Image (cartoon, rainbow, N blue to C red):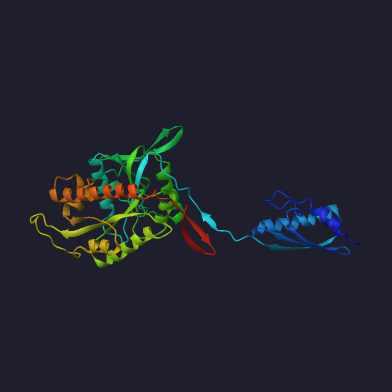
Length: 379
């Protein structure tokens, strides 16, 4: 039996490639048909490399020819994939959170420099100045917010907001707080991969009833990694504060932290650098300063990389003790401590004001992946 090419094409017009609205011939998927007696060769070009799509196309071609042309035809289907090179976008819609005026990320290149202590005291100081403040403890693997605000045993409740169920942040010392620490047991390690951590963060960001806030402080984990990108991908950050101690090891990592925010395709304004543990002052000698970790290292770094210096916080025993018992040191009556945190807070507020007056709103970023390489782009 001699098969006719026009009959083969007519049979193939009864097939639709998965994901396309046209039949296989109209869409251009059929590149060529060759017949030899009772044998037929069909060349297909598909736009998707998915194995199940290729297999289905082969089966559909054989079935159509057997049913509509000749049931004993010998059929060979050659499938070529010609998928256009596209960037895979791992995108979370970065959008302003209704009611929140400014989002300030607090970061550090190195762990153990007191970033969470600075964040907690900055939040309390802002609240004491009359601002409406929230704090998102985004340090997924080492959440300390519940301890520092003495709310370890608290659990966020569910509230109904305009027909939607939302988490109600825990409020302490005038600060609204959410932390992954509220959802884990004491001593339980959080062993999550990046996507799971990012999902948890987005729930605390967008599924929470933050209400009206002048400032939302985001306590980031140490380093420059996946959580940082997830946060900047999720919402537009007004500006970043980088915390460091004066020692060279911490300063080297702080420099990297600043560089991350200043990367061209991220471009989050750096409000400034804070020098924590700047000097040691013993309680019995309040006028003395001992520069245990080096003198003015972070201040010199800020001058070197041309970002504002926001202030220095001394190494005072009561600051550590206050964090451990859940009452931030900024609430103390100690002159040296209150003055240090007040100065820091005023400088941060001033930098936010200057930033908002002189720069356009920060855009959230999106992360693209292409040919195994990753890049960060502005939305």
